[in-house]
Image (cartoon, rainbow over all chains, first blue to last red):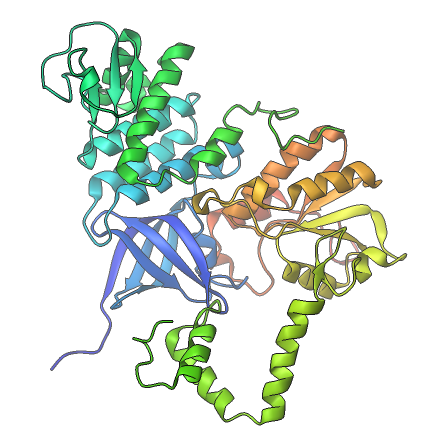
Length: 269
Length: 213
């Protein structure tokens, strides 16, 4: 006889995305260590007195009891492990946290274990609460995420012919997945990003070191620009159709801590 | 039209099921139930419903000042001489105006953003009615802007964004208090809500009256 009783499981999760459904329910996209991205409904979560509502906002790190469903699971209990308060109350940190969360979602597969992605995102959000170098954290996160999901770009040898790269300036091809040596440069019609020697050193350092080792890295403006373009182009090639939250990140990235903000939406009187 | 979901339904019935299915919160089963309810509905009721739908599309416009949904170019709130014109309460959706009006505790004006900043869904400040708000602040003698966005991450992001844009202009920017809701149990409150409630605590007056800020 097949039991009709729903199976309950407990898991840690990060809330990556949500949308409103029904009268007062919420549909959640959750990143979990054992099941990767899962979708679950939280019934009544939009009501003010809901016991779930306060624990399942975006970027919450939570412990959940979940009823297994055929198409959608259902959240039955939620407890907050960390709300990353310092991230939610600072627009600059928030924009970076949302970018990292979206990136994690876009490279993850539904219902497939993703412990490395999960722990990477938790650790990165914890660092984001107090780092002075949030942009380096985002670049480190993107590179580490690509590495643990099998999309690591090649920085040691030519991505086309496999030969070791001579020290010097090179170019990066997102389509071919890495740096390209001078001999292979003209072989494709793909977009090539310049990568000078210092940029290549920065990329290799980011790829092999843990964040605390690179957090104090002082990167020159040209190297910062090149690193950003290389990682963005590679990420966009992997996730397809680009990362939506990058527009918000780009808009608030250079806002000062206080005072008037630069940009098109500025309120000039 | 998705004929797979209603293989045996007559084309007009399938069309109505499909139309209901496009509404927010209405799944395929509910769409079928609503459709078969309407088939049994008296003709006059069906006509009244269809007339109501068409008149919403024909007669409803956005108020040219606050962008709330209204029948006239300027809504009754913006038109009223009794409202305090020095305060604007910024809300995400027209329904939020109704919620605040029900409290009878606010007599200022409104501004409806028609959404909130949601980077994950690709919705930025440009898609909201923020430029219109800045135009109002330029033209009207507003001294206080009350941010009444939802107390979730997107609402907070929108509030932070507006606060950063508007504070340097010398206009007082406030937001609704955060904390425990009436009837809630403390043991189930999340840490953000409790921390906000502690931060926004207020002294109880000697006469036992509700505290005011």
